[in-house]
Image (cartoon, rainbow over all chains, first blue to last red; front, top):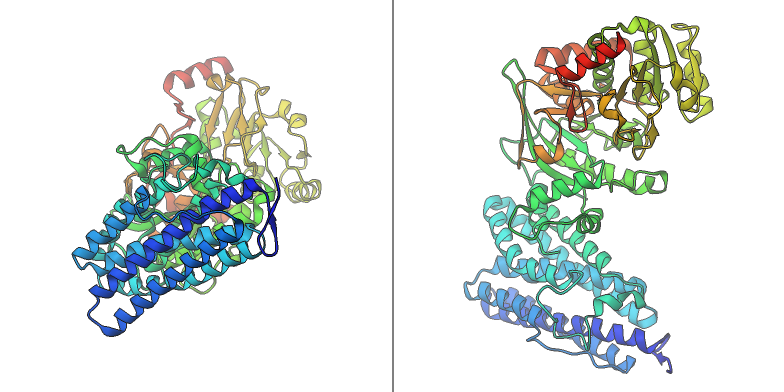
Length: 247
Length: 377
């Protein structure tokens, strides 16, 4: 089988297949992010905040478009399916909080939990994938880091004002959303097929591109816990939350 | 960054009086802690699950600690786990482990702890150099090794008494004799035993240690191989910095008293320990009690008696009760007889007694002690 040239590197068909599934997750995740920020545009009263949410939605859209173009270069299709089971559950959780105009919970879901996973996983793929593929993931990870840092700063202020209130809110959102994310990155899919992998679950094939799900999950949870630490939440609380996640 | 920024977090009544920095010494212990935190709802964690999760957990406070003195006073603190993997204590992981200890120390600072103590391998990794930890930040660091030594030396004396003998008639072997704890035990016990034997891996350090002890015991002898010294030993203190239980003492005599003060435990037996006078050394029992929130007592302190803790951790609690926020134990080789006596007196004052004798889950009951005395007589 011929190798596929991606601008400045060549990949085997097996490697292309793995990256196709990874890109499907990335494209769908970015589009969910885009939708989430678009919902926030209607929720904010302040014009500057509306504009900022719209800009964030635009950034997420641009990331999705970039990932799709990478897939095209690879000669594969990145599946974009907003109804893919895990992603749908996350978006529905976001919508439930948005319906209650709970902007803090929305920020926790999109900018803390999803971004922690995105920053960590894109960063790891950026460090291992060759050429433009790797550089693109690394670049997007850097942009998402800014979103994460911004959210940590705002949530830190919320925590300083009302520690118990924010702690109970994070606990509730964590149970709902981090459970889904933990299922997504568990060694086996506890809730069935993710709806985005073309065939069998890609997790077992990640070794073909020097990745492995245990490390990806570990690094993502590490960044998530460090982000919670930076907000000010007590280590023993956040450890209990993480210990209860699906494995 | 493992913990919140200063000023953001103050749980309970305010800043912690003390912080205890530790780590699990076995995967079984790690699983127990993680499972206790997980609770009974979700699927129980397997050993393999925890091996995959634990290395990624940043150092952090795991529980709040309340310790009471028999005088009625109390001190509040935190237990901070550095989450060093139990099977990664060897030199290849040194830098990563030191980084974790420093992060754990940052946690102690951010908790506002006035004093922090370094449990298990934490002080070994730093070689007692508490100056490597955050300076001038309101938290002082102590290795806790002086109280560990106090519990060891009083423990072997008591074990000898229980067996109907006196230390002054016995030959003592110290394994790990050039370490901070081992050398402290040597200095304290050299004038109190019939003869001293010392063992350590580094020949140069061992020679220096032997020279320094010879003015107490001109007959003192040293060897780098423990097997050379074992046949002569009546009492053995194991205080080596071993990453796993690898010291084979199965060939020691039935009459030998073995104090295993390592963390992780030094000694490996093949089942014959059940009739040996071997005990977990360097441990104390707090008469008035220690309370953990969440209650991880069974997981963090899985001993056959309540309120048991390692001397290194108890030293931090003791100094907090005394409001003596100072680096009481620091560096290697600075544990003096006077300091051991001083911390022992403080321990007695607050009811931090020598822990009852046990090894693993087996306590020394009266029947065991009686049968041992019979064998010896």
